[in-house]
Image (cartoon, rainbow, N blue to C red):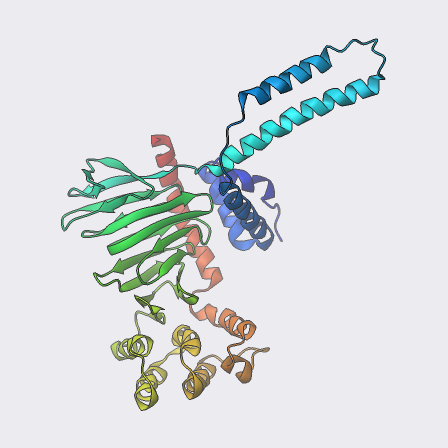
Length: 392
């Protein structure tokens, strides 16, 4: 299927050692090649585990002892009573031991450090601050530091080499992590716009009511003063998660979040106002009995074929006869594929739900649309990355 896999380049890719063009090629390949994607995930796991190891300095005496042994072995007389093979093996063993220790220390050192423990921030307007210091033209946001904007300020963050985030007025964000396996911001309040061209699930934004996991996309995310949020996706996909509850939000769709509850049910923004209002009540008002039936009726009557996005998510969020009604309407709009049964869906069989979801994604802007959008984003992004690299 693929002319050439990229296994040999994955380590360099993980450590940011490739050019923008090379990184783009590998990232494109990872989107469509399961074999290389699996190897990439293994490397990320290895890097993560290595990062948990303590960084230790080798004692000076160790190197002195190794050098002394190597010198002693090299200086052994040719006419010694020991066989030549024994002398040669001892010398090789000593050299190998020294190299092994050196390589081991180097590996721990390389993989335990973060590629760069800060992000570059550019002022777009006003006087944004990092900590207690105002940003003039450009600043550095270090791990644990807060970036804040007032009513007249805006800023732009370079997210390592994988994207950009624009910070709107009256916003407060903090850098939580930046490393090979994870780049993470915390959005305490306000609004940000993210434009990410990395492989899926490398960039995350924590909010008081959900975590946004980027799947290669562009989106806006806002949080109000009580921690409630609203995600709007303009290209690609975003996963919203909290305590095992997850919403998959494609381009053109939105999803509200609430503290404690987590993400609501995603919906396309061109759905009717009454459809969206009814969905909000089902998600966050703890409706029961006849009240739930009446509100659910509005959703089911107004659901279009593309609103199967909403109905599929809703299956796991209602119970009993309400779930049966959702299933029946979903099956009318997009008949269940072979291998899916009514009984299995009503019991929330994971394999059947996934099978039906894969079939429905064609009308949501599924993997093929994601890849096309993602590659288009990369085309425009490569020039920006090159400019950033040259500037640094």
